[in-house]
Image (cartoon, rainbow, N blue to C red):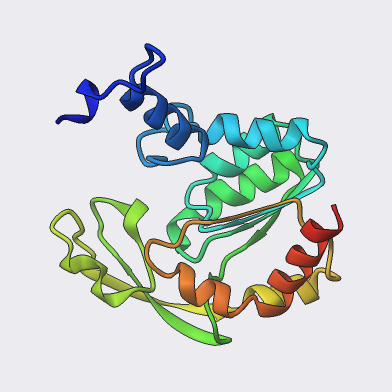
Length: 193
C-alpha cells in the first residue's frame, strides 16, 4: 500500500508522522533548511544550552552557518574547499565572528582533487565517482589543500564542540576517518552528560 494510505491506529496518518520525524532529523535538507527540519534541529540543539561552538564541514555558501548564527551559536568554524565560496564565507565570518577555513577535510593531510560542476556547485565533492549519479555533472576539477578534522581541532586548541555538521557529498566516511581523536572526545562528552 502507498505510504499515504497506511494509518497507525490512532487516527494519525503514519506517512505524515514518518515524514515529520525524518524532517526533524534533517532528512531532505537539500530542499531547504526550513522544509527539511534542519532549522528546527539546530534551534533545538541551541535551546538545549549547547550553542558555544559548531563546526560546519562543507559550508558551501554559508547557508547553514548563517542558521547557526541566527540560532545563537556564539562561535563556529566554517570549512569549505571550493574557492568560489571564499568571498561569501569571509563576509559571513566578518559579520558573525566565525572562523573560515578554505580547505577540504579528509582522512589525510596534503592536497586533494575537488570535483564539481559549473551548473551546480552544491554537489562538489572529493568523491570522484559521484558524477556517475544521473543528477550529478561534476565535469570540472580543482586541486585544493586537504587536512583532517583532528588537525583542525588540535590547531584550535581542542575546544569542546556542541554541533558537528558534515555535508561532503559522499566523502563523510573519509572525514570521520580523519577525526578519530575528536570523535572519541565527543563520545566521552556525550557519555558524561
